[in-house]
Image 1 (spheres, one colour):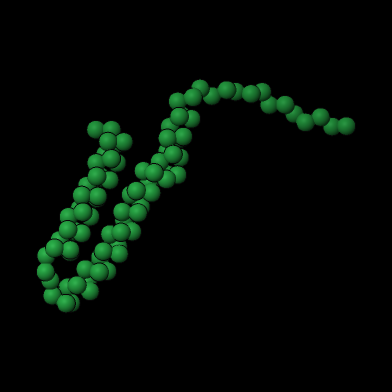
Image 2: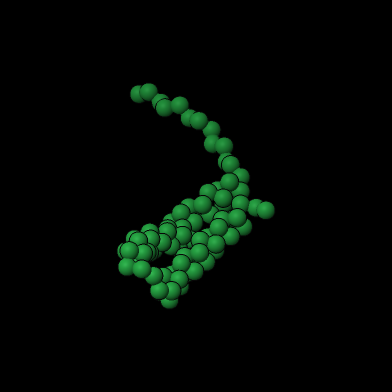
Length: 86
């Protein structure tokens, strides 16, 4: 399995887990102490979702794609010219 497929599957799994958690927090009744704990976890999950979405639509994904394209491009060797002294 190649690296890109693993990254996509990990991102999809994180999104699925977050959606399941949001559903359970919203529709399953819990004790008052559990609600406070769930509120803190919701904030963390929103942060994780932001990181996952930011990777796929942000500069990290573009930077990884650019690095891959540069690796495919043949390297041009330019001669080194010594500076002239006047």
